[in-house]
Image 1 (cartoon, rainbow, N blue to C red):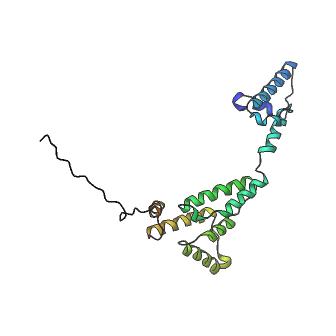
Image 2: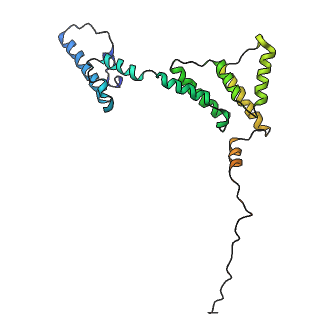
Image 3: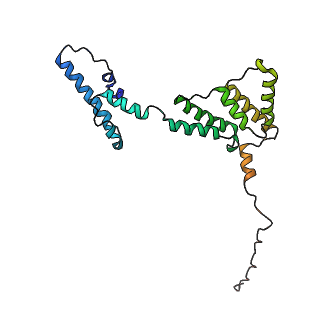
Length: 207
């Protein structure tokens, strides 16, 4: 907003050295203009937060303290939502992973980082049939190699999981989302369908 009006530079804490009183006056006018521009673009129900502010820096610090960080309660909610996600609640593993990544990124923005290993383990424990072979193979390989096992990155793990889904679909072990929707739709009961009656044509008397 300030940049589009050529007023961003007056937000800088460093006050320039003025050579004349006119320059000092013009600088103060630009600051007032910037402050007024911000006030005009703030919702009425938020105006009380900046009503006492007399400088741009005060306005910035006030809004940063209110909206610049995700509050702790919101982080707890996101953490709970991430732990509650289940692949079986999504039509495909890609959609599940997409939602998982979205919440993980939101937590990261709030300085609550979920490590790759933690995320991988969390997903593995949530996978059910028909991913049981994938899960058991992963854990058995990890146990067999012990210290030589190299944990994949989270992105690599997601790619492997997506490929596993493609393989299961090709083997008809796992239905596609479209097939699943068809399978879950109620079938019509043709046996109980009432017979349609046809009235005999009435002979015309004009013939």
